[in-house]
Structures are given as structure tokens and as C-alpha cells.
Image (tube, rainbow, N blue to C red; front, top):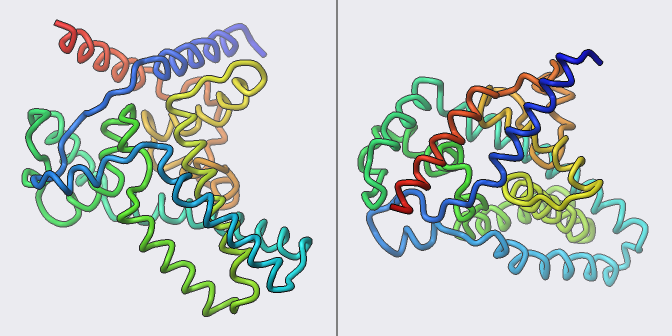
Length: 273
């Protein structure tokens, strides 16, 4: 490895760690006019685990109770986990990003940072594309350090869970669905946990290096090229379909990340005055 490449990697890691060490912003922006809708849109990162760990446990126990067997239950759960990684990739790429073209994303970006923090944003957005993109995903791209805009609200995740469970029941039947669904929901929890950890947690030691390797692709997705690196919990589908960035990531997003850090610091200084 050349000295220039090594220096670039050190610069990248320093930027990534500086971005991660900046204090979380909470709150950042108001989305809805009605207070009850605004409260429902702000979710603590631990809530999905409270809701869905019991579901995963129950489904695994039920699978064994139905006579599927421990080994078969484990295999079905792994298949469900794999199905989640594909769902994560497809939703992120084709629902959150493809629906909003570059013009829509630029328009949203320009509007949301000009509106006062306590003023609802949605009335200022035009058309269903801008509103859907911002509520579904754009708010996280514009305010990636807001921990309560990171995980999916239960008002959305619960209906989706019911929908997927029904779909699995229709396709797999009542005996195979519990274990498969447990793996699927477990994959969702892994996604939420890894996503939060990438943005906010630095555990140190060998895990630190793993988080860095996993997180820099996601940071590149945020700050440089949001048409690559769609997988958060796994790069599998990016590798298979060609959206994984094979270039040396040492050059990723440096100027974009610097701008974001400086903007955050500016906001923090203003808030402290």
C-alpha cells in the first residue's frame, strides 16, 4: 500500500469517527402539523426490540411445538433472514430512492434546510413524490444524526409485519411460516441495530474495526453517492447486482463529510449561545 493511499485511508477514518462523535441532534425538524402525528413519527431506537423480540421468540417456540424440529426451524429462520436482506435492499433502492428522482431529492434538500425548526415541513413540499420521499427516507438523509428518525415507526412496521406474515402464510403454509417469519423479523432487528450502531456507537477493540468497515459504505451512501451501497446490515445484494462500490473507498465523501461536520458544528455553536 502506498503512503498516499494509507494517508487517504487515515483521513477517511478520521472524518468518519469525527462525524460519529458529534452529539446526536434531537429534535431536528418537525414533519407534521398535528402533534399526535409528530409524536408517532419520533421513535426511540430500542422500541422495535421491545415489540419484536417477543414475536421472534414466540414464533421459534411455536415452530418447534408444531413439530417442525429444531434443525429445520433453524434452517427456515436462516432463510427468513436471507429474505429480509433482499427485502431491505429492494425497499431501500426501489422504494426509498427510485421513486424520488434526483430533481425531487434536490428540491427537498433545498426546502427543508430553509424552514424554521419548529415549523412543519410537509406543507412546504410539493406533490406526493416529495412528501413520500421525505417521510419515508429523506428525513434520515437530511438529518442522519437524529436518533429518533432512524428506525421505522410502529404505525408503519406493524402493518408491514402483518402483511408479510400473511404473505408467508399463503405461500409457505402454517407449519413453515413461524420459523421463516422469525428469521425475517430477526433480520429487521439486526438491520435496525446495525444502522443505529453505524451512526452512533463506537464499541472499541476488534468490533470497532468491523463497525468501521461496515459503516464507511453506508456513510458513502449518505455523503457521496446514494445510488450505491444500499445494504446496511449486509452488502450481499449490492455485490450481486453491482451497486457495491468496488473502488478504493479511501476517497469516499471526504468533502461532503467535511461540509456536514462543519454544518453540525455551526448548529451546535448557535444552540449553545
